[in-house]
Structure formats: C-alpha cells, structure tokens
Length: 182
Image 1 (tube, rainbow, N blue to C red):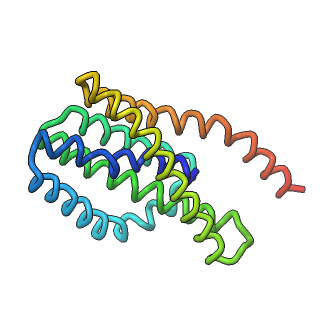
Image 2 (image 1 turned 90 degrees about the vertical axis):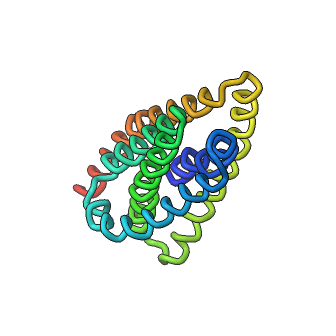
C-alpha cells in the first residue's frame, strides 16, 4: 500500500514545478510549497488521532480521494486551483502516509525500526516508479499541448487505486478473521 500511496502522491512532488511555474510564477510556486509544509506541520498532529481511528479501507478512500481531488484542482489550473490542489494533496498525504505506517506497525511482529525501514524502502520504490512513469506521461502531455491531461490521468489513477486495493483486501481480511477466531 505504501508503494502505491507514494507512487500516486509523488506525481505532485515531481511535476508541480514544471506545471505551475510557467503558468503562475516561481514565487507563487514557492508560496504553495511553503503553505503545504506549514499545513503539514500544523494539521498532522491535529488529525493524528482521527487518522489512527479510521479503518484502513476508510483511510484509503479518504486519502486517495483527497489526492484525486487535489490532482483535479491542479489540472483546473490557475492560482486557486494549484493552491487548493496542494492543500488537498497535503491532507491526502497526512491520511495515507500516517495510516500506512500505523497499519504496518500493527500488522508486523518485527521491531519498529525494521518496520519503518521497510516502509521507507517502499516509499523509495513508489517515488522511483512515479518518476519513471510520470516522466513519460508528463512529456507526452506537454508534447500534445495539454499538461492538464497529465493531471487528469493522475487523478484517474488516484480514483482507481483504492477501488483495486479494496476489492483485493476483503479476502485477506476474512482469512485473517478466521485464523484469529480459531
């Protein structure tokens, strides 16, 4: 789950500058990233208890949903769309990244340092995959004269990932419930 969460999120990190700066300014892009960082620092501690209380499927729906809405807002463009998109992606990151770490800790009997090491490795793989796939997608969209199509494609991925992930999970959850009941 961490690989796919970071994969989807990193399109924002890798390609926002390429999209935003020519359409707004470097100063505006810097302000969006500053606001993003401030929101992350303030909101994550405030939301941590609520995120921890969410079921994993609900966290996937909320997190990927916020990221999909953020990608759509960025694709709409303009100062407002890019700023709102950044805020929504921050909320998606807070939910998905925190819940993925909490879930990994809860499901593993390994030492917490080992679990976090695996989570960071998964994040690196997701970021790498996003860079490789995103470079091709963004380049093709720019060549076609429609960078907005890139954000639409990423939005679609964010909408489809939880559907795919949640459809696969129930069988595993039922097996785990039977094993725990026996």
